[in-house]
Length: 193
Image 1 (cartoon, helix red, strand yellow):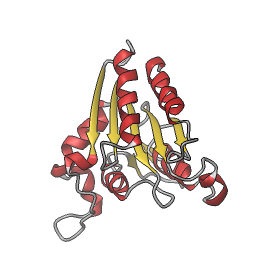
Image 2 (cartoon, helix red, strand yellow; image 1 turned 180 degrees about the vertical axis):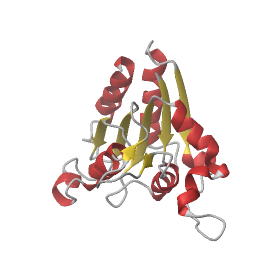
Image 3 (spheres, one colour; image 1 turned 60 degrees about the vertical axis):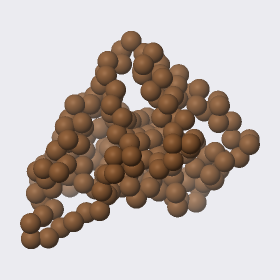
Image 4 (tube, one colour; image 1 turned 135 degrees about the horizontal axis):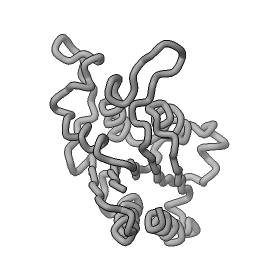
């Protein structure tokens, strides 16, 4: 299994970074995990801003040479792992900018007749690990599950990735947030999958 981890948090002293380390540890100790790459969007200096003009058109985004390395990473991976915080009820703009550019038409999906496109990333799996300050039930109760719907249905299922595991951890700034227990849960998942 080849794993690409997309990490979207600017602080390497954060709990998100601790989750990234647990993913890496689990993968390293898992005999079925053959290769792992980490894309740290902030450290990489990824530009999340979409630019469309006479030279850059949306319909040509899948051929943008500046994004070729990132497309190769996604193509290479069997599993995509997203590690990010939930800020204002959604992932950071950095991650959303990556999604806008990388999951483009004619790379991640292709339009066809009917209401739904053909997902071009079939056969891959995905894991989303998100942290938030608010309680775990907040996205479900107050946001109608918007963060999960955004990542699982609107993005990953849309591009053909049907096997999606979601870890949504709330109350992460609370002393009662059981951070160590949740870090261990993520480690165990990647150790055994």
